[in-house]
Length: 149
Image 1: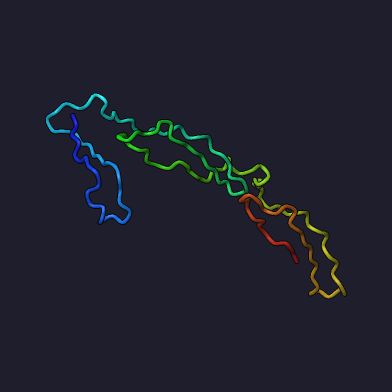
Image 2: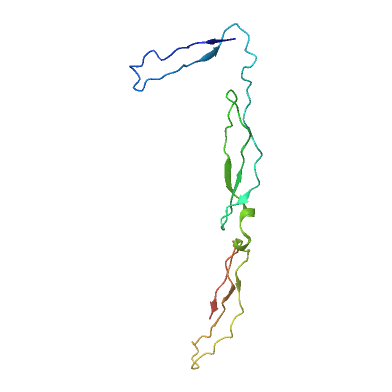
């Protein structure tokens, strides 16, 4: 059972600037009485499954996924709590054109030794080499000298 706690026309129109007309009702359960047959049966909110991760574009690997409410709560049910969208970094969300292959630095061949000029016994000859492939994708840098004398 339920009791009608208030049922009346606005008795204080002077208090309200734009006086209200009509009725106002508030319902509550009565202690010791059985519940009304049409009482609210709680329907709690339920989330749907997460969507698949989707790339946000660009070369940073940022992805997002979404979910919604598969079942909406009613007035006496519990609402859903939690995010509707999640974002994360995943390597499989990096566009193919952005992936830099792992390569260690490598040297090209040494040049020929330069001739010693003037016959001076202190004269030196030298040779050099250049980087053939720069390190990329976290590869190791070239080691060793680029020239020799």
